[in-house]
Image (cartoon, rainbow, N blue to C red; front, side, top):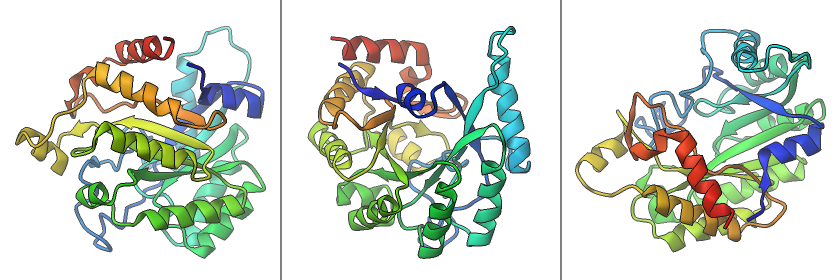
Length: 296
């Protein structure tokens, strides 16, 4: 099965391979600071899903330089081509701050000569007008991508995971961003408790026709210290097997438009805190299984 991968899209857009550096801007979330809740989403780790991000105590420039070193350490020693990067503001909700603080952080990233674009992970309910105007302004300097954590279109599940906003809020956010020509990538979690295969495929199909340019398909990870972990230990639900997940990914890609960029078909959980599914920690085996199913 052919689909539009992130690597192929980046080569189309920038004419070369681009690497991603996960940034921690020191943000919080309305689901954490008491505005909506204090517990966070039921699956969210203590690091706000930014477990692989750089150290938040460093400046944005220092984080970028550290990330570059990590990438370059894996490159062939005789490589002379200067790398280009995407600064990915990943941990917690990265538009949830006064606009002037956001401006300072984003500009520091955009001004770095090795940064080709910035990608900002956030919630659809954290995009007020002044932030949208800032994003529009920055998008004229270098590409700005917004990554929205939708996870599911089903309100019963959204309430269970404590998402804290309705599907209509997501729709409005996509409309506002696209009216400013800002690319949108939507995150979907596959395997949420209580959802059927049909539920998950319907979410993916909806996202594919919601006006976004990209999608991340993420396997549900049960992480130590989360409320989801307690439910798992109590036997409230079971995680997908690797074979079930591979089949589900195949069916999800089938319903997506050909032009949508699939940024991810699985995901990494920090091995030291991962409770389930343990098979997901073997990334090479997972990717081999997925690729084998998608090649049939």
